[in-house]
Length: 366
Ligand SMILES: Cc1ncc(COP(=O)(O)O)c(C=O)c1O
Image 1 (cartoon, rainbow, N blue to C red):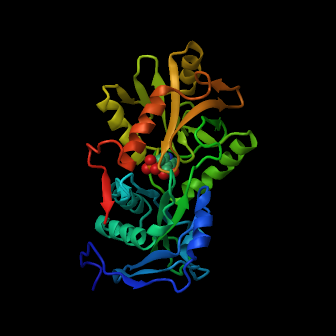
Image 2 (cartoon, rainbow, N blue to C red):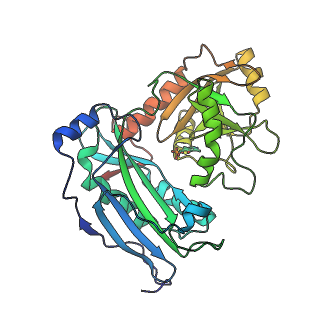
Image 3 (cartoon, helix red, strand yellow):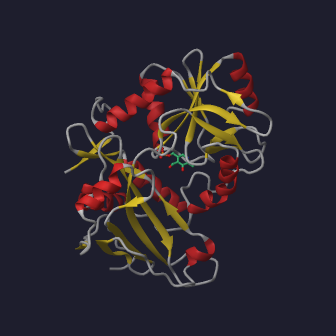
């Protein structure tokens, strides 16, 4: 097959692990998995080369990957990833939430990072394949199986140009709550020194480099007793952009909402879902710039009633307090509010099958 042959799906070779974690040990791990520490038995790998295109798709035991020390990813950081969850629904079935949106965003990230764009059907095939093999790893209760597709440049070549070889890998992690504090409102640190993304940069792509660049600000947030960092724009340092791993919404006294516009932020799938849900309740949602000065002023007058962050990992989390070098801002009484709680309940209800899926967002896995 040559690189010009358009393939949309791929056949997987299947070699299940000979050493699965036994049921009792798995049950112990699933009791309180936390976030991102408990991994399943299997993984998916698919290779891409400039000459052959996509090939060598495997469902296999999860194991370390060997790389040439000259692999481009280790030098120039050519890497992208995604994050989505498989849920057990109230009727016992398993479902994904808008996975085709992750497939689409994965392609967009690949395009920005000069990497091959995996066909969306192939991405979905990989996800379904792994969820089916590792379905026993989906925790009960509020837990879920967090799926982490990623792709990186494997070509052994030190010249600076797009790699001619890439490896796609999909792993899965059994997860509970993202924040240690559980459901209560989170505290965020406003970074006035570091920015996350600039016009023309990679802010809208889900590439590892964005997160590497955010870690110092995240460490600063932790040092100040905060759960996450919130970034301002790179040009004027006044427009609120997003958190290190979540989008942000502001809720006002008239019931309307503002969320920062797309461009330099990650186009969150939860963000898009919340906009749709809020508008379907008759709320006005503006995708509009909102400054930190306005945030302070509106919090002081009480015009700003609620602020929340949203993303796949933490779903919807009320932001109670924002801390900064110029003083703290408390929102309401610092514990979140009813609109945040209502939108979260609707979203989780749709994911779990307790609220009607009128938008066709849920994809059941047989
Ligand atoms: C920087 C950033 N913003 C926003 C989000 C939320 O995106 P989504 O709702 O698609 O998970 C994420 C998480 O993936 C993120 O890493």
